[in-house]
Length: 93
Image (cartoon, rainbow, N blue to C red):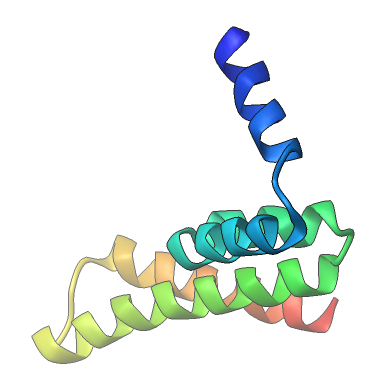
């Protein structure tokens, strides 16, 4: 708890430009951090956009691999299909 409190105190002591720089660096290094910030800000639309991009990118990787190899495991194809359908559901919700 000491280390946690110490980190929290250090963050609270940052000036606004330093805090902005810290947040920018965290976002640059982690997509999850970006989603967490959108969630914290209550911007669920941005969270959904991030998830959609992430899902499409993952499905695209699987589909590209299938295209290069001329096929692949059925489970991987089903996974890509499920991810694509889930992304479409997020888009229209």
